[in-house]
Length: 181
Image 1 (tube, rainbow, N blue to C red):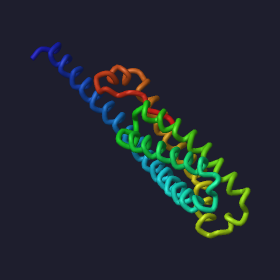
Image 2: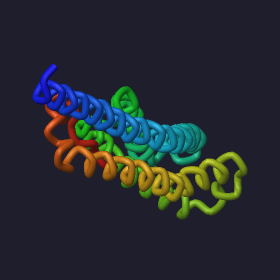
Image 3: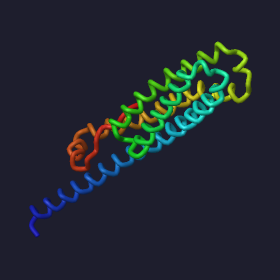
Image 4: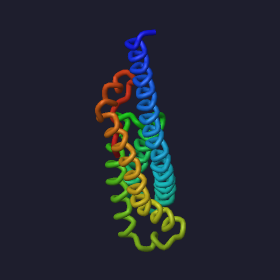
């Protein structure tokens, strides 16, 4: 075997090891996004359960505000559906955008229901209603922390796929940018 053949084989071996290493690094970053998504999904589920329970508990005493309660339930259903789609593949940019839209609707509807609840002080002292209202209101801060971790994991992944020479492998491995919440 000639020196040229040995050099070509050595270069090929280095190239293969680099490709495998880059792939493993990107997969580890994608896995981190999935782990961060689990925290977001748990916070969304907890808040969704609280929204459903609160709407059910307020259905009779606030019958005149049925539109606000229906809007809350519709927004919660939209978020649940978008979260299920994003949960199937947490790196999908399009699914993250749909969830962000659903979150905006959910935030507006929850604010409206909580504001209406403030106008009815007698309802706020009922234990079932008060507990669900606290979970719904507090869900925003827990969700914000989980979102921050998800976004940081997505940013690390996006930085990795943008770095040279790893970005040369992105089309080969079919990696794409991660969504943000």
